[in-house]
Image (cartoon, rainbow, N blue to C red; front, side, top):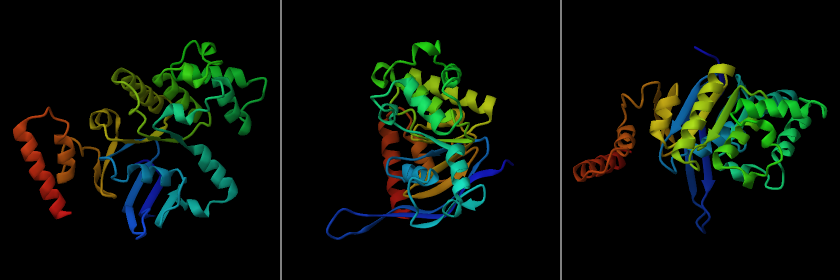
Length: 277
């Protein structure tokens, strides 16, 4: 079994509701999870189940209310300055809306060269060659034709490839992708999924993919974790083929072609699930 690059133990995340009562909302409720080196882990569930909140904690963009997120066995909160810098390089992000994650005033060359020069991974004399090689690696060819483009001059699929290329410049061991397919059409989704699978096979990069698209995740994931109301209700390599939890079965049923009898059965199952939770 491969080593865990990230681990979560007993993670709780609470938010204060924006109302006069100041009620606490528990977005995550006792999450235990290991993200292993070189694997693709899919985290699935409906909107509001806590998937994106968990992704933000794994990226250290927020702190949990309780519990520990650890990088290679060391709590992130206890990392030294040098260790945190290594963590920041090892664990990269690709966000849901690629256009929003790219500076609209910067050309592709400027966006990517900033990363290289900031981390001293290239000199001004070599930066263009490194960027062109990275663009070719994510399927943007000929690379020279993309260097002077702004984000609005790229298609959604091209924007997402630029975002992936930017993450790859730091030679990460793990990319956390929060709904990376939701803003893309079906044909482009297939291209991005194929790119992710190729990167994993060639470079050994691991992925945590947050998604509600069960079909896509079944195609690429080594393991699937199913989230419901802030909890992981089941996880494993065959969760979507042999679900053990009623909620997972409900998610799978929701993919089927609408049918009145199935709709009634699904409504009954959901009502039963609500009563038992």
